[in-house]
Image 1 (cartoon, rainbow, N blue to C red):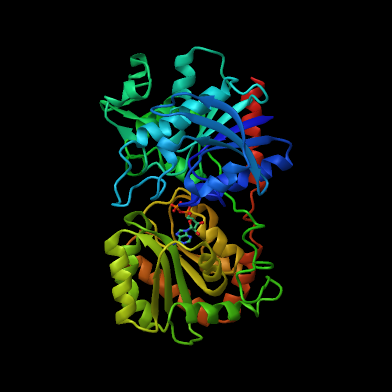
Image 2: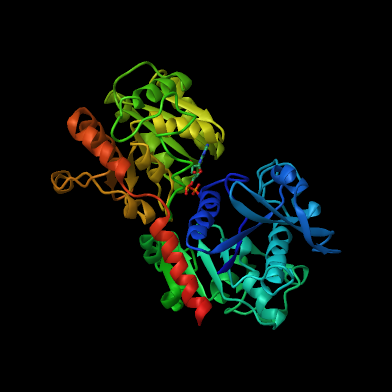
Length: 478
Ligand code: ADP
């Protein structure tokens, strides 16, 4: 089976969040099942070195305002198709926003071009390779089925995955002609969304199947609370919607051979985890302490519920615990954690920034990872936490609910607990969860057992890649 993945991020090449980790990992597991995946990605500056060794497969004289090429290159076990369109992607700044923190004003053209070129490939524009199925990810690839539909030519089936419904790619109706979209698609069962163009809506309305990244989030999306305006459409398409849990790349995230850690460790031999803890305490300006060390590795946004955590800091510190925060995002949250680090010097430490290596060290050195998200499609940091024996303390929502087994009395007796959950998602309940975690930590043996159990919990891609494979097979065979 030949599969075309279309996405705006792919680890380890370009990453702002969990989407990249997924796109970088699933193709490898699918390859083990005999499926060949090519990942189509914009050629951002971070990919310029790779681009040099690429082979041009197709040229466009004018792709939404400038010339462009589709380049083929393989790196780190991933076959990439890079859309080299300098007028759209060769610019400094982040993937989606400019230096002032505003969305690039031509984002519709940037990701419209990605979708346009992907539709082209799907319909056989590369003589050497034609996919049996296209899998599009999030709004940035949402227009692929729209372009396929308006071309009227035979097209392969399309699967769309929602990694986070909060991002919908909504633009004024006037962009329709700039995007070379036919007016006939500007209807409620096409790309139209409350009088505007929505890339996400287009993908959800026109793809053959829809998936999201956990079974709980698939259910939540059908409600007004979580569906963010798309719940009606998703309800109408409920029969085509399923939740397939994300996994993690267990080669990249492995405490038994992680070169970032001062000393490796395993579920059998945990002692060396303490060396990482010391390294984290040093790096974050925390005092040497044997109390529980919590960490946060996150975008600092309202979604992640970190305002609740700020309010819980007196209780956390009062229980003799410490907190190390690695994150970047909203200025208010950055300031709140910086201020807390000054107020609780030696107990709370904050590093503002995005640092992949440091995130590995934190997973290695912390005792527990806090994830109080208001909603969480799947979440990956709790899975890394499980793998590294860093107990996840999570809000009971979306994928967090599906991946962490709460250490209630029954679960402890049954020897299956892997973390701590709380609900409702309030400051008060987060404070209770932090208190429960500290008590478990202080119970020594129970904590030790839970840590080893967490590390053995299956978090790889095997079963989910199989679920994707089944979904693709059913579509390709029909
Ligand atoms: P989301 O995609 O909503 O941001 P996920 O938990 O699915 O949340 O994925 C976040 C990914 O980004 C994880 O791989 C996490 O380790 C990483 N990450 C988040 N913030 C940082 C940071 N400041 N530094 C390094 N890695 C980070």
